Amino acid sequence: MTAPSTIVFAPDSFKGTAMAGQAASAMARGWASVRPTDNLVLKPMADGGEGTLDAFETAVPGSTRMPLRVTGPDDRPVDASWLLLADGTGVVELASTSGLTLLGELRADDAHSHGFGQAIVAALDFGVRRLVLAIGGSSSTDGGAGVLDELGARFLDATGRPVQAGNRGLRDLAVAEFHTLRPLPPDGVEVLCDVTNPLLGANGAAAVYGPQKGAVTAQAVNLLDGGLATFARVVGRDALRARRDADPTHPGAGAAGGVGFGLLVWGARLVPGSTGVAEMSGLPAAIASCDAVVTGEGSFDSQSAAGKAVSAVLAAAAPNATRVSLIAGRISAPTEQFADAVSLSLLAGSAQKAQAEVGRWLEAAGATLAERF
Image 1 (cartoon, rainbow, N blue to C red):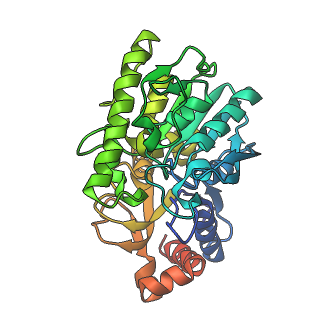
Image 2 (cartoon, rainbow, N blue to C red; image 1 turned 180 degrees about the vertical axis):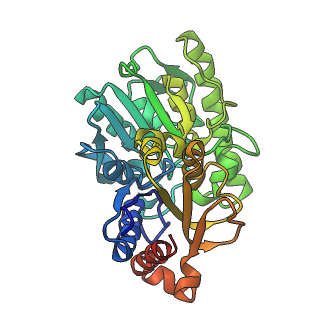
């Protein structure tokens, strides 16, 4: 009788069908149906977008949900939460506080990031020693003005009145005040950021992400970019006086509609999203003592190696040459870097069938890998 093996399940979410934690659990159930004596470890992954809190809650022992109500991106109240880790770190997710999915209808000019800022303030008021901020899935293009406003900055027009929320208000900005901005927590702030876009220009926040937030014409995109340009100019001038960095060309400054830029002004550090999640969840240590890893995502394609969760899993497995298998909704790129690979679409007979019963087919894929192991 062979000795039990230790298998780590570290998938990303299967967008629109299963969160990362759900996917990891389903894969593990399928594996256990074939190899019931194996030791199965769940380390669901995320890249800083929607589902990051769920992934941390599953992967990090001793995590505690801290519920709160915030002002959503269209001013409606949103019931959300931040996550307190056992070491005193607070994890706050933009998608669940100021995210695109919270909007009843798109608001390219007026959606804002105030709710995300309110959740950050709640974690600071609790007394966290460090913050980890997941900024994927933003609904707004406000440059992080909403976040900074909640943290104590003031953004005024030429008459000395506060500008209105959203990108629309940035176009009237004349003065930025930072002397009442809250300090960072003792051990700093890390921002999980899965993009490298600058704040402005052809590769900036407005041009690349504005259309998905409702800016469907070139004129609408130009208005958003103009608002961000005014924000960058005024903040850059006044942040310099306050001895704060405000570089709109910094890689990731354009993330989340410019929230990356706003957090840089606060003094936060931007780190690759999936790599940060892997390190904080203890994935490298778990992989170092396991026999195999199963990762996955909804669509494995040519972009999957560019900073997505599966690439972070492969990197964590490389030092020990641990075998990594892949489960994906569909596979459209070579998989020679994996020991094995299963497509849910092929397993189910079609993409539609796989999506309709994703839990069933994730279990079946886990069982298939276990049979081949």
